[in-house]
Length: 82
Image 1 (cartoon, rainbow, N blue to C red):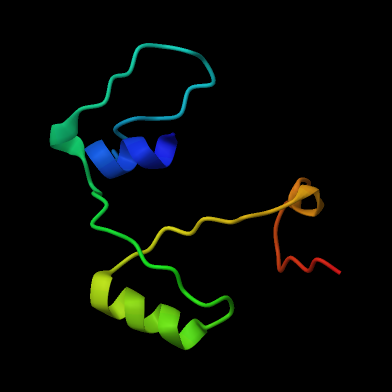
Image 2: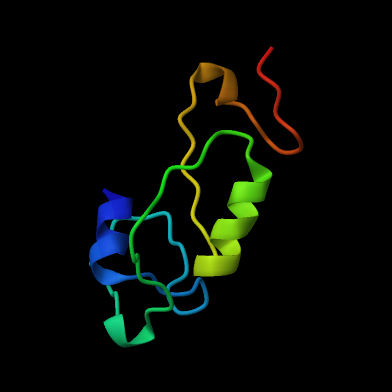
């Protein structure tokens, strides 16, 4: 749902739209949008060279992770799912 919203409308900075742990009315201001989705590609897992090519050509990327419960308590560092 969040990805679809960002794709359709864009994203503001944390400074302009800080996180609040509460349900409130949306205050999104499209004139402050700093990102718009221009499409996507799937990259082979672990292919850092291809990732570098995509970043060089298109700029910053967003990453989606398909994870199971072994990832639920991840806090930082390199994650290994043994």
